[in-house]
Length: 221
Image 1 (tube, rainbow, N blue to C red):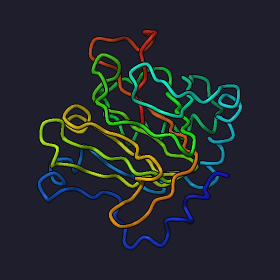
Image 2: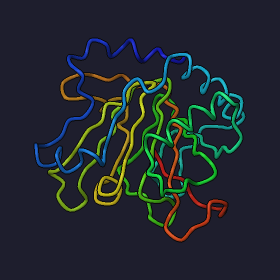
Image 3: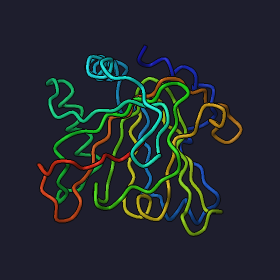
Image 4: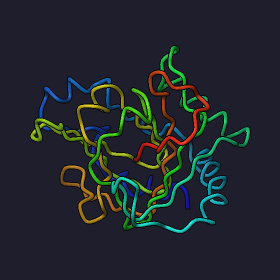
């Protein structure tokens, strides 16, 4: 099942993974909203998907989230990984996080059913720090960021299976982010059909919080 979405988007012209409302917002978020396509090989995507399936299949999809941000999802926090998956997550840490950043000890895993979606929201600074980084598995999707004070300023990220997205600083705090539902899933004029999507999300610690502190609601997306 893993990797099927890669084939569907090969017809998209050019290496464009980010589009925005204008040059100013593209420049402003150039280093704050980043997509790394093909970060995972097809084999690595399969490794993660297979490992996560045993955890996720015991859970039911839900349609009410604690802050009403997510529809049609199941989720878990995972801290124990196979050696192969740990190596992948170490690569994410090296690419996405600075040398002075400490990560939350658990990784958030979010599974959206094909009709599931994530509503526009801004993650609370109480629950995760300045950087989040997510691996996208199984299905392509479009993430939209909209400025909370100037809604005419927006950015869209094309997230193919195997890609890594990174949101930092202004992209985290000044812009809402969402994953578009299937009927709205377009990247420019190009239809991006949604299927089941799993995201594996690493998060930096909030300021003043220790890595083992429990009970922190996860970041969506």
